[in-house]
Structures are given as structure tokens and as C-alpha cells.
Amino acid sequence: MKIRLQGRGVTKGKAEGEAVVTKEPISFWGGLDRETGEIVDRNHELAGVNVKGKILVFPHGKGSTGGSRTLYASAKKGTAPSAIINIKAESIIATGAIVAGIPLVDRLNEDPISTIQTGDYVWVDADTGIVLVEPKEKRKRVVRSGSGRGKAMTRVGVIGTGRMGNAFALNLLKAGHEVYVYDAMPAATQNLVQEGAIRGETPADVASGVDFLITSLPRSEIVEEVIIGRDGAKNRLRSGSVVIDMSTTHPRVTKMIAGELAKAGIDFLDAPVSGHAVGAKNATLTIMVGGGKEVFLKSKGPIFEKLGKNIFYAGPSGTGQALKLVNNLLYNLNRLAMCEGLVMGTKAGIDPEVLCKAVMVSTGASYCMENLPPDIFRGDFAGRESSLNLACKTLKLITDYADELQMPLLLGNMAQQIYNIVKLQGHGEDSPTSAITFYESSAGVDVRIPGK
Image (cartoon, rainbow, N blue to C red):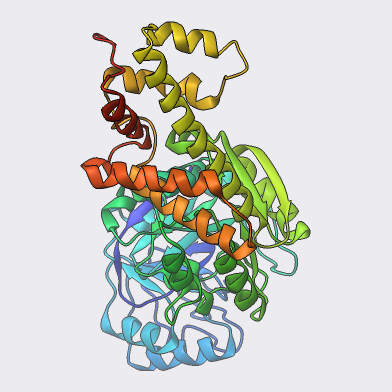
């Protein structure tokens, strides 16, 4: 487990690397060789230690404004520390770090000199003041090709931490990844920060330097804006990174985003899911993936297998979303068929529980008949599903996509109208199973079982 410290970000930016720790103040003026990054103050306990690219931890600076100039010159030559952690930064070091663009954090909730040891691997996020420490005895010896330094975790950003995205982020943290999170409602990230995630201030902030970026958002236009909008994640993503949209969006939007990201050398997968919030929590989701086959295989182990149980490669970009829309079409039609059958059977005098048991061992069996009747019997339309509003949104996507494909969608269009009627009757925030009220009011019966 990483140790999480909270401090004040004096500058901006993120960095990571091995820590070099000293309990003595440091004067960069005359104490740091700007050509090599070596500490050359013979009287200092770090004399002869090279701090190039290290996370340098010390109480505070000392000396003249020449220290700021030395730090800036070292940064220009690539020999400076990658980040600085102080107990309390004084103006000379702060000024130098600001000018040099070096992340600097101070005033941590625990003494960094005693908490961090030389050789620990440290992640510094000066934008939020968060410092993560992996003790050297627990570090995994995984080295990126060409990096020359240890790297224990895959860096993953998650944008949109509602019911589904929050569970994604938690499971990725459990898998040992370094997770950055953002949500338009900051409170939705609070539990994730407590578990070790790093909160970004903007989507672009979360995208900076990650290997994979996951979006879980409510509408196609939000996905588009967050990823390729003026201030979108695209501006901070590096070439070779992978964006994975796990929202349910229009295949046309998916293809357009994939094309825009490809121009910047960024890979894109559409990977909508099925399985509701409980499946997200338990990492048992079905995941339907569209995009490049090699990118899918690259993402399967570190991402998809940490979030789901049944993972399907559907084909080129957009086919993951298309498969999800087909699944949702069938699910929403099956739900209405269940409602219609339950009401018809109840009006005919059949015990609803007997009806369900008989159907479930007959050819009319379905996921809906197996799982949804208990909510109906109780009249509990808060239920286990997402809202009717969301179902109506998805059905609009389905019927629009069918129009683009120039194919008839007779049952789908009828289902859309029934769900819309139920929504207008005040059930928008309820489960889509509340659609049974449409049939009940028409037939003059209620499918309720007291005490269930």
C-alpha cells in the first residue's frame, strides 16, 4: 500500500521518481552543480549525491537569490530534481521552483523527513498537494523500456465518477494502478481520494501523463466535449495513450472521436458495459469493445479484466456501442413483454408468483422475468436498475441509429413511446420497471403481493 500525504502545492505540475531525503537545509547556490545535478557542498550530508530527476525532500532552502537562478539553470539543462518536498518552503526555493516549472509541495500533514526515506518511490501532484509514497521495500521492480527508472503502476485516469465510474476507479485502485479522477461534482470523488486516488481539477488535468483514460459520462455530447473539446483531454494526452469510453453513446460520435484522436497518435476504444451498478462494484460486468484489435489486446489485461467478467471484442470503432444498443433494445423490449404478460396473467386470475415460476422453466423465460418481478410485487420502483429517464435516452439513441442504418424498428419505436408515456406520468426517476403501471392502469389490475 502507498502512503498518502496531503500538503500545499506551492507550484503546479506532477512528477514521480525515487526520493532523496535529507534532514539538512539545502543551498542550491554553490551547492548544486547545474551541469551534472550533483550536490557539491562538501559539508552537506548529501555531498556527492546526484539529484537529477529525483524527488528531493529537505526541510527548507537557505542562501541567496542565486539559488533560484541555479535551480532554473539546472532545469533548463535537465539536471534538476523532478520535484521538491519541503517542510516549509521559503521564498528562494519557491521562486526558483516556479520559474523552473518544478513541482513543489510543502506543509504536509505528516513530517516528510521522517515519513519518506531515500529510495522510496514518490508521486508528487502539486496541483492538488497530494504526495503518494511507496516504501522501497515494497516496490515492484518493473521498468519501462527506455525510462531507466522504476515504475510500479499503470497510470489510469477516470472522468465521470458516478455509480459506474466510481466503481471502475475503486477496482482499478484495488488492482494496484495509480488512479487520477475527475467529476463535475467533486463530492463524487471524495471516497476515491480517501482510497488513494488523485483528484484533478479539470478533465485535461486528469489526462496528463496517463497510460489509459476512461470516460463514464451520461450523454454523447458530454463525452465529445470532455475528450476533444476546446479544453478537452486530448490537449494533455500523450501519443500512444489509450482513451476508453465506457459510456453508452451514439456510434457516429464514437467514430468521430476516434478519428480526431488518431490525428494526434492517440488510440480510442468504445467499451460500453452491461450489468448495472452491482456488476460494476463486483467487477462482473459484460464489456463490449470496438476499435483496433491490437489496442483491445493491449487494454484487456490492465483494464478490462479488472472491471468485468465477460469481455467481447465486437470489431472496428463504433461496433462496441452498436452491440450495446442492440442489447439495450432487447432488454427494454423484454421488460415490456414481462410487464404485459404479468398484467394479463393477473387479470386472468393467476397468482403472479406461480406465473413467474412456471414461465422461468418454460420457453418464455428471460432475465427480466427472473430478476424484476420482486420489485413489481412490492411496488418498489426505486429498484435495482438505472432510471427510466436513462432508458428513454438510450431508446432515443437506438431509434436514431436505426434511422441512420435505414432499417425498420417497429417494436423499438413502440417501446420508446410507451416508456415516454410512463415518464410523463411522473416516473422519470423511477426504475424502467415502473412501465408496468401503463398496463395496470389500462387493465384495471395491480400486480402486487402484500408483504413481498
